[in-house]
Each structure stands twice: as structure tokens, then as C-alpha cells.
Amino acid sequence: MRVDYNRHQMWFAALGMFVLSLLVAIADRTGYLSSMRPMLHDAFSPGRLVVIAMTPEPAQSAAVASAVSSGSARSGDQTTARQLQLLRQLMIENARLRQDLKQSRTSDSIAQIEDPAESFSVHALIPANVLSSSGMPDSLRDLIVSVGKSNGITRSELVVDGSGAVIDAGTDAGVAAGDRVLCGSSVIGRIEKTGRWVSLVQPVTSANFHAQVQLLRVSEDGLHFGAIGMLEGTGSTECRLVGISYTDAVTVGDSVVSADINGVRGPRLFFGTVTSAAFLAGGQWDVRIQPGFTVSELDHVGIVHTSLQPQIREMVSTTR
Amino acid sequence: MTHLIALVILWLSITIELAWSGTMPQGALLLPIVCGVMFWMRSVTGLLLAASALLIDWIARPGFLPLCPMVLPVLAASLIKPSSIPDDYNAGRRSTRKILAPLHLPLLTLMAVILQLIGQRNSFDLSILRELPSALATLLPALLMISLPVSAGIAMLIRLADELGLRRTNRQWI
Image 1 (cartoon, rainbow over the protein chains, first blue to last red):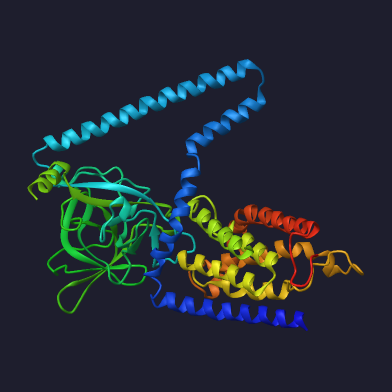
Image 2 (tube, rainbow over the protein chains, first blue to last red):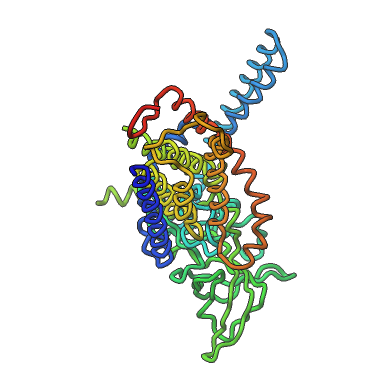
């Protein structure tokens, strides 16, 4: 009798969870969970950060693994001596690379200070891991990345595909049309909400996404920047470009790049490619754009963080 | 106390998956642990705890449908004996069902993994049925490579706990 009672209770619990899950799925579709998601990730973040801190670096673990495997294959003091020598060489190499990196950073900052054409702002790329990449729909409705307020991230900062590189130089730094771009970055979206350790990304395809963009055409003569318009998300897998006058030229295949980053001139970031262009009754173009990223490969992203030059920031803080 | 430990283990497994989200397939660690918690506790509380962990994980990392928290408790309720009955491994005539009892946990894990893969699809239409075999063939081995050994380990741990009398029933010690 008690067994039946317990079994019935379990069945009721299972059915209750079924209904609850269904309700949660509906709430997710209607957007009620979007504010709850960063909070949940923030709740998991202390444990996650501890696990990351305890995990050895890939290079370090690979070196240890190779050392262990070679050690098991050979025997005797000779092997140990070789391993120690290798370890010493690696440590020296590591120290040298660190020194080079430090010098490079210092020289970069000095060059920026000395350049009179440099603007007041400085763009930095903050790397982040994607926490909710797997199982995400094509529309990228909720992307959570592993940086938040503690990393200085604020709302509306652009998120780019981390596999490419952000060129930290714009027209102010002497980059002009015709210069070859060796490696670009695709804009994925912008920061919508920030938690302490995580941030929610609004994708470029989201219905509320807006950004000022410029058309870019590649021809035999070089690169030609075209009309400036407003890119809007449509809520589907593509975007729309509005504000292009009928006197401006638009061709299928044109690239769409950022005109500015939150009102500040900065690196040109790739938004997508024009897939269709048709005239509207109001004398404007209806231009459709395919975003230039693949969702399934998103593991690491970068966030373009715009801030004042350190010297100017100090001056502002002292005047206050 | 058991409830608290189960809660901590579930929380830890989600944090580990989030920390290694780039290298570990989603659900590879959480699914066997959730199934293990259900089988260890054999109660309504265990069922609710495990299913809630799955639901929270789905909210944190959404897919198309939360199939695991929807279907897995139902499957578990049909497979798991309530804690008022001891897991009788050898008593009486050895029917096929009793012989297969230790395989229930890996079997439930396998079903959970398949549900997870289906629930992760971008949309649910007829094309999913055509793509499902190829998707399973590519994604399933990576998931099972971690989840099945973990599941087998938990099954052995449960059996060991039964033998040592560490897993209490409502009425008696096994």
C-alpha cells in the first residue's frame, strides 16, 4: 500500500515537472526569462571561476603530459636530466616572451600618446568565453559571455567574433580606403545586460538591434566606401539596412561595415553582406543583409570596450 | 543531509560544465549525475531535485525544448523502485528484469543523452527526423564517452552502498 502511495507520488512529481518545464519553455519563448538568465549564470559563476582557477593552463598541462609520456618511455637519470633541461629552456623561453610582450605593450602605449591624431578614446578587445553556445538556435536569442561588470563591461558595447582580430586603428590612425585588411572581425551583437561576472548579448539579428553602418564595395580599383545607413535586426536570421537614399548605389555582394562604435570613430568591423536590394515606394532601398558569422563555431568572442585615454582619464579625475 | 549533498553535487556539476563549456559537450557530466541522484534517492524529493537541476541548466543554456526535464522524470518514475522497497538484487527467482537492474542507470543516462541532443536542435520540423541519425552519429559518441563511464561508476557506487548498508530505505536497512 505504501509502495503504491510512493509510486503515485513519484508519478505526480514527474507529471508536475513536465508541466513546469512546458511553462518554462513558453516563458522563454515569450522573453520572460531573459532577465533571469544572467542572474542564474551569476549564481553559478563563483563555482565556475574556482573550477577555472583550479584547471591547469592548456600549454602547461600539455608540457606536463608530454614530460610524463616521455618519462615513462625512457628511464634513468639521463631522461630526468633531459626533462629538466627542457623545462629550463621552456621557462627561459616563457620569460623572454613575457618580456617581449611587456615591451610591446609599453611601446604601443607610448606610440599612442605621441600620436597627435589619436582621439581621446581607446578601444580595447576584452576576450570572453561563450557560456551558452551549444543548443542555441540560429537566431542567437540569448548569448551569455563570461565577462561582466567586474571586467569593466558596460551596456551597449559591441561583441565581435573572437576568431578574427580587431584592428585597433581607424581613419584617425592613418588607415584609408584601399588599404588591405588582412584579418577582420564580424560583429555578433552588443551587450544588452551586464551581471557581475556574465553579460547578455543582444544579437545583430534581434528586432531591437540598431547600428550605424556603411557600405563597402571591393572592386579592381580597390575599396570604395558607400552610403551610410542604419542596420536593424529583423528577428529572423537576416538584418535590414534602412536610410539609404535612392541616389546611392547598392549592389548585392557589397560588404557592410561599422561606421562608428557607439558614436566614436574606431576600427571598421564587419557586419555582413548584402543579399538583396530592392526599391521601396518611398524612394528608399530595402536592403537585406546576411550577418557574417556562424553560430555553431562560437566558443570565444571579444568585446570592444571603448574608454578614455588613461592620461585624459587622470586629468578628468583630478579636475573633479 | 542527503538532500543537501545532492544539491551541492548537482550545483557543482553544472558549474564544472559551465567552466569547461568549450571542451566538454553539454550534459556529458550533468546527465549521468542527475540520473544517479534519482536512482540513489529513489524518492519524490530526489526526482524533483534532479529535474529542477536539469530545468535550471536549460534556463541557463537554452535549447529548443527542455526535453530532459520534461521526459526524464517520467522515465525515471517508471524505472525506479520507491525507497520503501529495497533494491533486491538476488532474492528469489532471477528474472530478466532483476538481472538487468544494474543497467537501468546507464540506460536512463543513454535516454537522457538522446533527449538532450534532440532538445538542442534549433527547431522542430520534419527535417529534424531526417537529420537526426547523422546528428546522433556525430554528437552521441562525444557525449557517451564521458557520460557512460560516469554512469557506470555511479551504478557501481550505488551497488556498493547497498552492500555496505549505506543507502537507507524508509522501512529498513538493506
